[in-house]
Length: 582
Figure 1: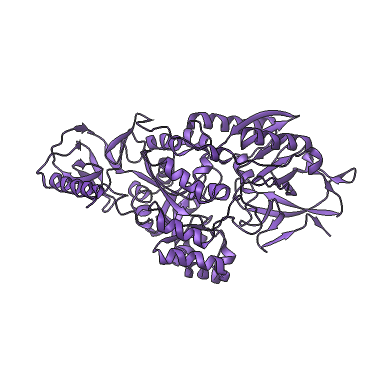
Figure 2: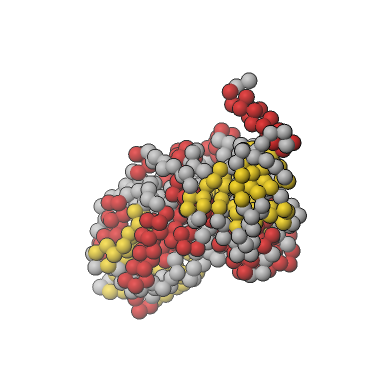
């Protein structure tokens, strides 16, 4: 028997003795009411904690006792699907930010960092998170890159997926399968990844916006069990009727909760979970995390028990995390203490039996180290304003149509705005120039296009956060400002920047993989808020989350028209299309 096995045996014996009442608990939370996510009841009971687990509910003695009279004890919250990279926070800063909000477990899809560094980037995050008091579980990314029309820094094939599923216990399934045409059509590479998950007995997340009918049946028949892209009641109902688990998303750019709550009110919370998917750090610091989604669900008419269940027991069961999601014997002692269930604002949070947050502040989150290699990821050839010139050779051009805060875009055909023989940006028609520049291998490859609806009046914005290959995406009214923005990103190791008249108005430095900051959540949130204000007040864009909207314009698997380093992509056809029409 190994030392680890002996420790596990001793821990279980202690837990059983505490449960029987033969030994005092390590900690007893006394005087509160425990929310049972199994029955919806509020139980008047002490919570006895032994080691990292709940040993029993009832009347118990303990070496330590904490009075929680007048409080409601709920399970620690679980974000069913999120991208850490969208918060721009490393694992320690993110934990310090969300623990005070009651989040104790997150299931992350790290396909952002995998597109930059492959599995080495994913393992770097998991290694850094080992001593952080927040459970990070990973869904292995199956679409790196998202499609053949994106140029990533790394690729993951079926062998890589299988290795991740078999060798890392914190990798619990296959992440959102964005290559919907490949899955539906039975592409060999996609089939191999699906079978790798099936052989490892792991579940598969989906990503299927607007998919319906026979194609949806095929997608579900492939073994995909969930979807977080439902934007309407009808879409979610069709998918739920086919057995899919609906991840009800409420993030910074995509707001689906209002549309989908009626599904919960009509059919109950079964088969539904809450997630943030993509959340900006200033939204996180200002509004909260999954607790904010719970509060909003309650405000929209959900019973508090249903809202909490969708953020605790349901994601734990879906993700096959049997020790998470409830306050009951044998479950991890992940507990949020709230004065009022409906208002749902945690005052204290316990993670694996230890105090992790109190009074709005995290407790005992260590600072993690980032390896030097993870800070070197922006490699570009020199760029000048002349590189953004688009010769005029057609009477009309295609333009990506931004639709407010929606992730999906439209495709417009507009008369080409031409000056001195070249296509130019036109503020009067809300047409900005756009470019995506390959930044992993300094190839100099660049895709050029036009974007309508972003609202820029002048200057330029640029980002190394550009789903999913995370090349540099730049949008501007001035070719020279676009070049300045690109070079500034290279200087700071990646991130996001706003430029006007050759001057940097605001920036968010993300030197870790060009995706993550090494600063605190408060610092990063302030920088993001400053950048958002600069884009709004300095450059004229009215979008509520302009940089997140920008970051999705390069995602080649979401309808309808996208831009990558390879050019314009018509995702509905799965083909590159020319800028000019006619």
